[in-house]
Each structure stands twice: as C-alpha cells, then as structure tokens.
Image 1 (spheres, rainbow, N blue to C red):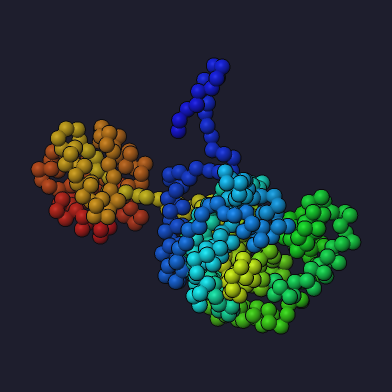
Image 2 (tube, one colour; image 1 turned 90 degrees about the vertical axis):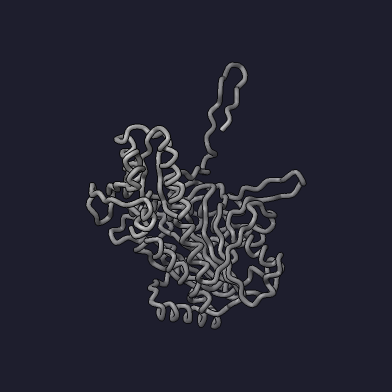
Length: 438
C-alpha cells in the first residue's frame, strides 16, 4: 500500500479498508477456499456449470427484477452515473444478472440450463453477524423446467452441500407464495388485517406496510409479533395449480429423506419469487447459534415470471443463494477451520547444503505434496518451533549426515492417531511414496 503525504505537515496518512468491506487473509482464507473448492466439485457433479457475471450492471435490471419498492432497490444499492452518463449499479444479488446473461447469450433456446456462481455482492445496509456491505454468495440457478422435481433437485443440492462442508443442525423451512394470479387476493386480505393497526406502527413498519406489505411477515419487531402470528396465511390463497405443485414438492422431499417444516410466514424479500420458497436455518439443539439471530444460511425459491419480465420467453426457473461470510463464521465457531498443513517441514542448514534441501522441497512440491521450509534457516530449535506453528505433521533436518546417507529422520509432530515424537528413517529415494502413504 502506498503512503500519501499530507499537506501542511500532516505527515503520512494511514489507509484502512472501506467500512463493511473486509480483507480476506490467511489463515481464514483457507476456509473460504475449502467452501469454494467443495462447491465447484459438488455443483459440477450435479450438472451445474459456473458462470461469472460483471459486478456492474444497468440499474434498470435490478429495478425491474428485484422490485422498485424493495429495500434493496430503494435503500441499499450502490448506484452511480458513469462517465458515459449511464446509471449503473454494483450487483446487490446475482439472479437478475444471471438471467440477463442467459437471455443475452441465447441460452434460452436450450430446454434446460443449470448454472452456479461464486462472487461478491454489494449492499449499503446496516451490518450484522455475517452480513457486510461487500459480501460473498454461492448460488445455483436452473432454467427451463417447471416440474416440482426441479425445485427438489435445487433444494437437495443445497442440503447436500451444507452436509459436505460439515454444517449440521440445519432445518429446511418451506412455503409456497402461489402464482402471480393468486397474489392480489392474498395481499388484499393481508392489508385488511394490518390496516386497523397501522397508526400504532413504528415509522419503519408503516413504510413497509405501504411499500411491501408482505414483508411485515418477516418483521423482527416484537410489537408486531401477535399481529404477524394472526395474519392470513398465503397457503389459504393458493390456486389449484400452485397447491398441487407444492404438494408434489413436499412428497418428493419426503421420498429423498430430506426433513422440512412448512413455515407459512416464510416470504422472500424480492418481488420475483413465485410458488416454492425455502430457507435452510441453522438451529443447534442448545439454541446457542454462532450466528446470533441471523441463522439463515441459504435462501431461494421459484421465479417463474422473471425471464419473461426481462424480455425473454416464458421460461420457469428456480434457484438459491448462500452467504459465504456466514458459513465461514459458522465453521469457525464449530471448530471446523480447514487449514493448509504441511505434511513435512524440512530444516535447512547454512552453506552449500541449503541448495540441496531447497531442491528436495521443490521436487516434493512439484509431485503435489505440501512440504515447507524456512528460507531464513537458523538454529534447528527455532526451525522446529516454526514447523509446529504451521501444524506440520513431520519434521526433518537436511544436513551433511542426511545428505551423505541419503536418508532423513522424520520426527512426528502432530499426528491424528500417532505418537508425537516418534522418529522414522526414510530414504530420499522412497520419501515421496512414503509421504503419500501418510
């Protein structure tokens, strides 16, 4: 980082990251890489291909898709006019950009398309546990299939991923918002329910009632809880087609052995959702969530009208997104912090033999083994301390005696089921194979 010299004798200024936009640094970055690596391996196996959309998009894309009266569009987007006098926005979510790319590049001609994405999103909002102004999401989108089996495939993928990264105690919350034709009747009943009580609402709740009444169901205000509990349920207003679809989703989930709870208060904050909506919520048995009150680790649902709303054909779609920031916090709280652990740390001696030690380390690395050394060298006692700090499994000195005998003495430092301090003689010619067996 460069220093800026202030005027008037202020001296050098120190810069810090913009509030809510964090550096991702070692050793925590190992957890991020684990999440990303697992996603790429698993999502590819399930038939989803990665897409990467630009961070900047036309502002109108989000106004039309997310909804002009949502908090995201009205309060949270990073929007500015560029040098070409165009209004552009740093993406606050990635479903709308993915649909834009799907249409722009002709993928809508295919019968079924499955995509996933990884990347940063941007919202200017009040920060809370695991939610920042630059935050990272992993998401999956499937276009072209309106059958309930596509919903369930999407949900099952999210469920399998959470299990693969070691997150237990998540509960699938499920609801249906019905079709677009069902929504007006429900909103009319909902407004009629809340309207007599609006004078006593907080200013924020009044604003929500006027702009997006359904979001009151997701309010965290204690004063609203009795009203929310007594509010009409969207499930009572589903049309025949939407109700049948929801029944099929529940039946398929039961067939796959994925437990769920029907949550009639579950709504999503974006206007494009229809029919199935779902969340995975971290709910540990003791009730002591590492995420505080922000226990949702995945959210998604159907958006069958969005492709058409953005100028494309009538293509149904379903998708989900996970906040990677929250997953990193959760894994760390659970003691599941993946880290790059050297299999072997080689202590180097000063002089000509240092080159031979570095050559050995390089050859083992080129063979795909995680091996480390300290280029500073120094006393063996200091080097073994450095090896222990890196949690290396084995430690060996490469000195004159080892070079002449072409044999290393490997000392166990940290074995999961071994004997710390145990020493093993291994010839240099067989070292690579021996390490692989460990």
